[in-house]
Each structure stands twice: as structure tokens, then as C-alpha cells.
Amino acid sequence: MNAPAEPCLRCDGLRVAVAGRTLVENLNFELASGETLAVLGQNGAGKSLTMHTLAGLRPAAAGTVHLNDQAVNERRQYIARRLALLPQYTEDVFPSTVLDTALIGRHPHIAHFHWESDQDRRIALQALQQMDLDQMTSRDVTSLSGGERRRLAIAQVMTQTPQVYLLDEPTNHLDPQHQLAVLQVFMHQVRSGAAVVVSLHDVNLAARFADRCLLLFGDGRWELNRTAEVLNEDRLSELYNTTMEAIPWRGRQLFVASSPS
Image (cartoon, rainbow, N blue to C red; front, side, top):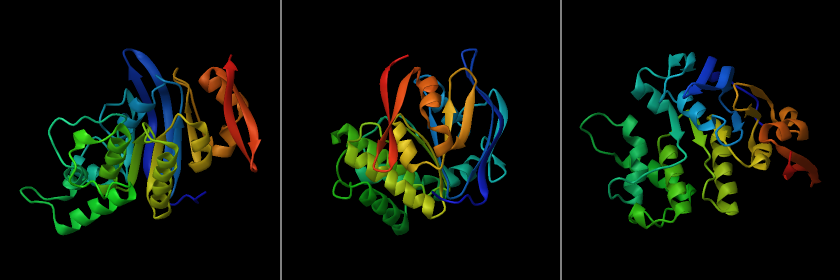
């Protein structure tokens, strides 16, 4: 795991609510460069809404979020150059090639009335190569499989070259090979000084890759701690409302849902 450096993302007293229901109450944390924070919880517990709130794309019911002491709902071009959000779902409204879609990630870095530079294209092509899509640059995005389209969405946020990545279920639609490959790519980004917040459904991926875990219980309660401290049978059974068992495997633990509680 990586030793924390200077904090880059901070939320204070954050409340996330929808339709009169408080999902997260008084959330406080600092995220450092070189750190990975996994967000875990049941469907509907507020993982995606929290990610969107951290990105400044929806207002907090209370509290503040700052990126390098800049409020995330202000100076949006400044924020977009330094923070990228991978949403759960992407839609392709207009026809586009794989390369052109990846290049959308460069838009915050390009001046008004300017086109992408050769450097922008090099950055996009490198991201596509890391996502195993470099042989598909001329393909129409509508011809891609679900997993290929997901990897393209990931390449697009990588092309943005942010300081902080907010990844909402990045392993959706991916086979096991690409799940591991994607998370390993982001661990390389973390070792290079980026910070990652990633929501996951797979507890074992969180145990493998995250420095800390944020558990969202969906009723305002939350718990944040080092991964080894917070991922255990009791906490996970409560979090998912089902019995979770820890099974020894190669010197580590695998967590398995055994039965409804």
C-alpha cells in the first residue's frame, strides 16, 4: 500500500440526500496523493450520488468539498483539469470513432477555438493502448461490445490526465482479465502521484487494491478506516445485510456471501 502524501481532496460535514432521504450524514475525510479509497455499500446506499457530489455535479445537502482548497462547484475548468469522474453509464448521442471519443478527455486542457494537438492525440492513444483498444481507433463506438465501451470510457478519463480520479464501478461489464488490468493501470497512476476514489461491488477487489475503505450503510451512517481494519465478517455482514464469511486463501482472506441474514 502507498504512504499518504499531501491531501488533495477534502470533504467536511458532507450530507448526501435524495427525495427527502439522507443517505450519508456528516462525512469527513481527506484523500492524499498516492492513495486509493474504495467505496462499498448495497445498491441504493448512495455510492453514485456521493461520487457525483464529490465531483461537484450535484449540490450537497450540507457541507463542502474542496480540491486543492478550491470548492468543486466553482471554477469548473480548473476542476476539470484536475478531477475526472467515470460515471456508471455512458451514452453515445452522436456517431464518433474510438479515438475521437477518447479525445473528449482533453477538452478541459484545450483553449477555446483550438483543435486537439499532436500531444493530445499521443495522450489519447496511450490511454487506448493501456485499455487494449489501440487497434480500434477508427471503429464507431456503436460497434463496440459493452466491455469495450466501458474500457473506452475509462480511456477517456485517463486522457483527461487528472490529479484525482472518481471511478464509479469501473469494472462494470468487464471480464476478470480486464477487471484486474484496469485496476492495475490505476494503481500505476496512484504510484505516480494520482489519487483514486473507486466504488466497487467486489469486496475482494477492494481488499486487494484499496488503502482505505468507506462503507456506506444507506441510512446516513458510514465508516472509514484502513482496509485491513474495516473489512471483516461482522462489518460486511451488516453492510450487505447478508452473512459474509472470510475464507483463508494464499495468505489473505477472501470474502464470500454465504446466506441471507
